[in-house]
Amino acid sequence: MRNLSFVKRMTALGMALMFLVAANVKRVEAAPANNLTPEQIEAIVTDVFNKFAAFDAQGTAALYAPDGTIEDPVGTTPIQGTQAIIAYLETFPTILNEIRVQHFDVTVAGQEAAIKWRLRFKTKTGNVFFVDGVGIFKINPDGKVQSDREYFDYAYFLAQLQQ
Image (cartoon, rainbow, N blue to C red; front, side):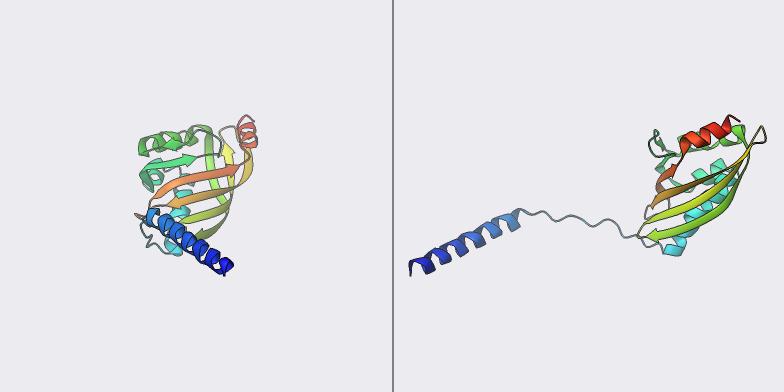
């Protein structure tokens, strides 16, 4: 009989604690729904690369949110905001004659896209080289790039620019 009374008290205590915890839990607002289809997201990131390869700094920057960021490559200081992105992209034609998208494979999940890419670069000195990388893009509900994080061998890229 004593064990049954103890079990009842412990059950009541457990239920009281669960009620207190549940009463203090705050509901988290869901992020705004992204109504973009995977095809639309793929088109956005494909457009980013095509405009970049065409040295279209203004057109590329227009695809980013006003406070969007580029981390190119990951580990360097992020470039944030439309004007900073334009200034950054305008440096490429000063060191390169040509950029070509050689390979592009996009995987979309939710409001993000992972892009496996290969770019062909031709420097002002005529050096031609290829860089393989992966980009991770977050697209906001307005269909703008919120963040762009690029992974590639930056040391190799810099060394090729010196040749």
